[in-house]
Length: 258
Image (cartoon, rainbow, N blue to C red; front, side):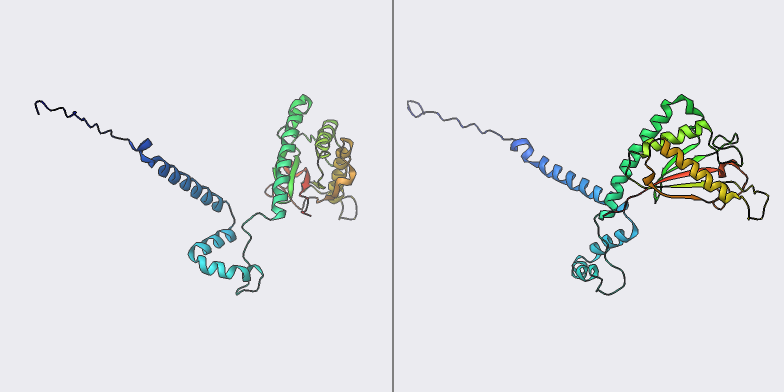
């Protein structure tokens, strides 16, 4: 109004943006973390044996009943003959997993040692190392040139002795007991079993390998067993005379959990 001394008041309304979209990102992040956790749980379950899978499935089908039955099942007093499996790794499994890692490191160390020795290149395809249920198995398979032993003898050739000595040096770093096995093909000696046979030959070859391991640095007290199987465990049953049946097997056994 004209002549009025009243001040003019102007109001400005500020539009806020909710502080980083009002915190919606936190909800999305929480959903993402939950989904990842669910994925890891599924992957873990898929890697377990059937008994564990059935136990987990039983919990999700009837969590209340599962909880009520769990104590009696664990004690073996509940209905049914099966007991509830422990979903965590047992002490024995933990010990074995740790030993597997030690075996893998020894395997890599042995491979490097063999690769660095150019004089042992001829053996690169004849040494097979793999994990088995009993432990780490190192298998030395002969070839058509009788690279380990002369046919029908238990005398190790010089390079073969050197190779086994290097294996002994690596085994000496381990606390595990070992088993040495000798195997032959099916060629028979000319007697009815009353003289020298493949059993004696395979046992003698296993003993020759044992001596080479000790020469390489392994302690003899690590030996748990030295045995000759003759041709009773052929690698190639379709060709019993094949050189692949002539082999030395060295197994580092898993130590039992204490």
